[in-house]
Image 1 (cartoon, rainbow, N blue to C red):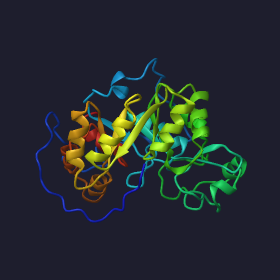
Image 2 (spheres, rainbow, N blue to C red):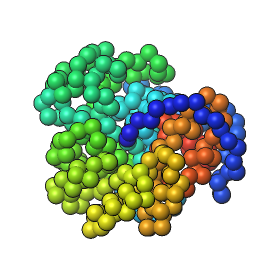
Image 3 (cartoon, helix red, strand yellow):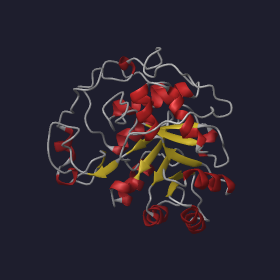
Length: 314
């Protein structure tokens, strides 16, 4: 997903959304964070595979409030494990969230890996652009682990295929296609992993979705819109293959666009990183009142444990 520039936020008190009684206690305590041994290198035991995903996860008419984990459970504002690693996705599975977002891009030898940045510099002890390094060279690089609690020494930058295999039957995967033009490789990994029922091709590029659907007409898709006009144009363009989810940009019109998404029989999704920052700084889960007041059905968060706590799911 796209990254937001974070800035000081003035929190305005507002009523809790209907049906939700937020926990006003400090986020990060109270025993609702999982034990790192449940997802780091020392354990890695995962919940059993489900026979079928929850129908709500692919139902455009579903209005249940759902949670997406940014970079697994590795988002910058509340990482439980190194971002975009298998450990981050194991943590998300242990938490029981509904969707996880991935950041695939190709290596020099044409393998899709899960790496947000163009280079390996920030997240590993190595240097260089992923596009200039082979898979073997990238997976030989230890990760930077100084800020994490737990044993993550076994972790390396994973392939998209390995991530899909891990998540099969446990959590839906949002594949962010904005970081690569190799749509063919993304679609191939989805097909090879038998993930057509639970991996969602996600991008702001209409052309990439068109290309992906030519390669695999049964692919689940997710569009991104910034305005009602943009929504109308994309839903018209994709009338023969409507998206499963509609991501709405965070801007002055988010609430109006979300309402328009609902009016057209779809589900709005948005990032809640601004509220994540408030929770991180102030320790009050009521900051998430503002997220759901936008009228969305799915929130992508850097702090999935806290969001689940807010929704009384943990």
